[in-house]
Image (tube, rainbow, N blue to C red):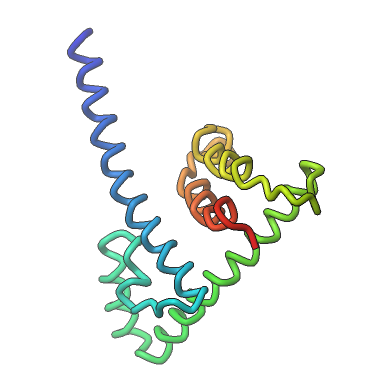
Length: 154
């Protein structure tokens, strides 16, 4: 019995450690995207793919061979624009949450409350699944996208 619990904990820790590494890469990519949106940096093609699994770069190479530089470049440019659109959507989310809370227009931007909400999305299992299927990446992406607004709303 004790051995089963120990094995389960060791496996759980390994899975969490792997997830931690992926999340760290995703956070770095989101931070770079934010800096890009602010005009502070320009993401390179490699940085654009940093938070994707290692084989994503293999898929990029395959796409280049199959569809050509022009098509891949157009897709990557669209992905970069989506980062800006994602922040615009999060700005709208922030506004709607403030309306829902009844605090829209108040001087208090409620950054700590919004930060708590963004963390709730990954801490509460109800937000980590859809149709009874685990989808933790969706909650993680939303949480990470909400970070700028939980620190300094527009």
